[in-house]
Length: 369
Ligand SMILES: *Cc1c(COP(=O)(O)O)cnc(C)c1O
Image (cartoon, rainbow, N blue to C red; front, side):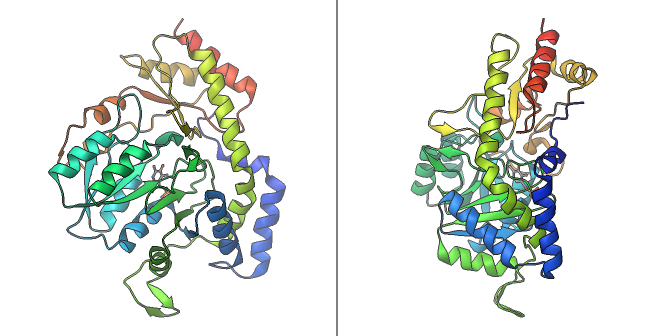
């Protein structure tokens, strides 16, 4: 069986180093906010060419911490997109703020600057926008940044699917006030448990987030703010330090797999292939094809019978989910609401072999023959 995601293979690929790093932490007697966390924060800041990185317990908390450090909470409005991981929306709502949706760009999966502008004109109270670099493709940061500046809203980047992705040669997560990351095991940089981080060049924001991450402490046991507990533990930090040096090579493997998929599937008319937006470096967190029409369910079943796992990210747009259907639709969301019925994620991880990629392509060709 070729799984759609297979984080166990990333463990096997570096088994000795991972076990040694974990053993070292266990032997050290220090498990929370120590050397490993600090090392990883420094290395990940350097990787992204920013001044500060703050480890967090997960990617959802990372978004919440940024918003809370910006004093966003009850009675505030925050814009984002409706086709993202639920985590983006749930993080915004946990601050007490309410979500407003902008639409995505036609033919892409990321926020439309035109739609964002319409939203900000209709709801000038909006304080911040969370842009999501979905599936590993950078959103149109020049246009989004320009709109955000003109309307005086904070720009935050959710980079949970975009470790190492670039826009005009610059890393995603460095265009707004701060960028959030998740190290969930299947992400491009994945821990073997939960983990997350924030990157920023803003020292004031960084200090505030550092306090909020641990009960609002600046000094131990003295809370300056009403904070939370969201720390990257030493074991996960040590694992991430082992894996970070391989991130670029692993992203390159994902890109090669994507190139093979594209070459092998380009002449199938029923499939729309993902595009690498101009001026970006796509890191293919997911390889998402579109299958318009009624065939998708049948295709998933066929692939499964052929030992190939596929997935849908995500089956229902957030604005249509029961937990979020009360959020008013301020602007037209037709692109957002359309893609979920067509998308299909093929297996995608650096450890996929060439033979497996060929098997997947053959199966798809067999189905559409
Ligand atoms: C995975 C993910 C998150 C949340 O990360 P967790 O570590 O699971 O909390 C947020 N946003 C997006 C787009 C994600 O893919």
